[in-house]
Image 1: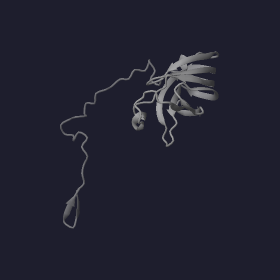
Image 2: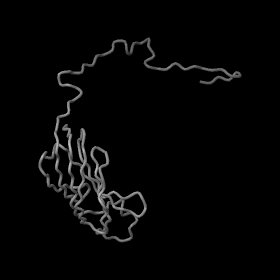
Image 3: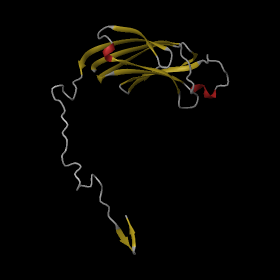
Image 4: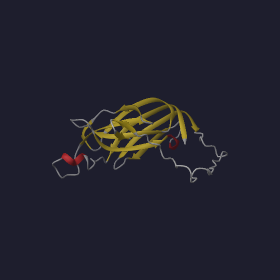
Length: 176
């Protein structure tokens, strides 16, 4: 797995084809699938909050053009989550996506359209300034684990992991 150290410049440009999820439609009275959304994007790097865009009202194709700059240490991925801004919290989930740092080019501007799950697309411009290192695995390939069978684990005289219970007596009543 790749680790990124440096500065990430992120520009959230626009989104398209956003739709409410089935859970979000539970209180709507219209049967239309083209319900307009009040959407914003939450940006995270390895579950550490970077920022949120402003809410764009009554649209399924919002345009933000907002810039974010963050310092990343030992970063693995960027996560973008789109929410519908509800009048009563919590806000409804619309879609999300994750981008691994190993999928991005360093030193150049990555102008990409990312597919959102479950539907929609997000237009991003990401520039990485820094270095990428390969993460060293804790279990080195040279050190092979060897499992040894215990000879005395299940001999007939042992209780095989059973716990000893104490019986207490109070006023001629016995309890465990």
